[in-house]
Amino acid sequence: MNSILLSQYDGAILGPIARVLGWIMNGIFWVLDKIGIPNIGLAIILFTIVIYLLLMPLTIRQQKFSKLSAKMNPELQAIQKRYAGKKDNESMMAMNQETKEVYAKYGVSPTGSCVQLLIQMPILFALYRVFSNVPAYVAQVKEAFFPLVEKLVNTPGATEFLSNSENFTNGAMYARQFANEAFTSGNVEYMQNTFIDVLYKASTAEWNNLAANFPDLASEITSTMERMDRYNNFLGLNMGNPPAFMVSEAISTGAWLMVIAALAIPVLSAVTQWLNVKLMPQADTGSDNDKANSMMASMKMMNNIMPIMSAVFCYTLPAGMGLYWIAGSVVRSVQQVAINKHIDKMDIDAEIKKNVEKHKEKLRKKGIDPEKLNSYATMSTRNVKPQSPAPAASSKTKASAMTQEEKDEAVRKATEYYNKNAAKPGSLAAKANMVKDYNERNNRK
Image (cartoon, rainbow, N blue to C red):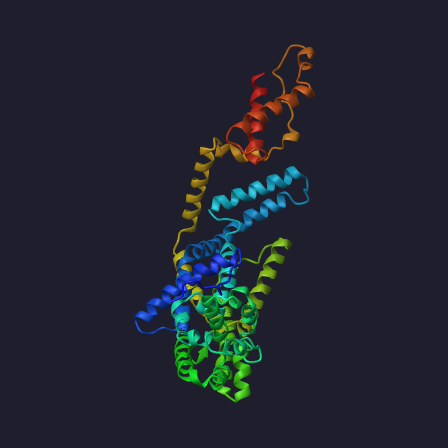
């Protein structure tokens, strides 16, 4: 059967992601087909479980970050207070460095709470491409359209009928493929793919219209419809159609039970999303820091809006996307309950102690003494003053203190020395080392 899938999305970023996700979907569907239950809805649920199991390490990190935030926040707020009102470059660098030290101490990343979201967003967009055109990614679904498309390609009038947007409204977006050079030149494989793209979007009424216009192909059309119904139908819903389309079609035919079933997708999406938000660890809002409280309020508002947004999206996107969203929320909720129980049993103080030792070891490998770093780090190089010279018998000896030029030269040499070694240029550690070198040089004089 055909191997080239011309209808796959070929975007530079989402294209490769869609192909990987399509490969996973194809594998799951192949297994379901082998055991006699080939169903796209069931494949989506299993696919969701696989994806979230792969994301489990990130989920644990996110939960861990939320738990440790309660202990981190007082230290972070103390740093913010210490540098409140200081806008000079040196103070800002020092504040950023001290903040990094706190995160390193607790073994979490400042981006730990959003990495999972950043990873999931391209997956969601790529999944839209996969679920919108499953035959392009799942071989068995594509093969379900044969031998119908093979006969349609050679049937007079079939091309004109399928390229008419009035006959196939949902597949109208693929009509441009009929004018493609590969199609007009008679590339059979491309022509078959184009027919499949349009037919996969066909409604029941459009399939019946096709059978009425091509009675000689009635048996192939009926056979293909039945096979696609078996694949796409999950609890009475076509996974390739948006709930909005199903509601509109059901109202026009008076099928009110179908209206309720179609609306169940966005409603369940909102409910499961709300449950998921409620199970998430909530950040401490008892801070006296206005900026922190403002951020927490914004996060709370976003958590309240998310269920509504998910309902809107799932109403307009293919039902397969809604099913993925619902299954994802359920899986995340189960994960959160299990992970929260695991983290609650952890000795957070012991975890912090382990992270502190790990951080100190990293500093030692860089040639930095962690015990002296903090004391040196709080000193500003521009406020360095020469050490008092050793007691002398006359005022002439006191007058021999270093000149400003000599002090500048000493600072320059200290900076060069420590920049060549472990400390990163411009970092707090480099400044601390510079101050340390300056003091030691003056003590030796």
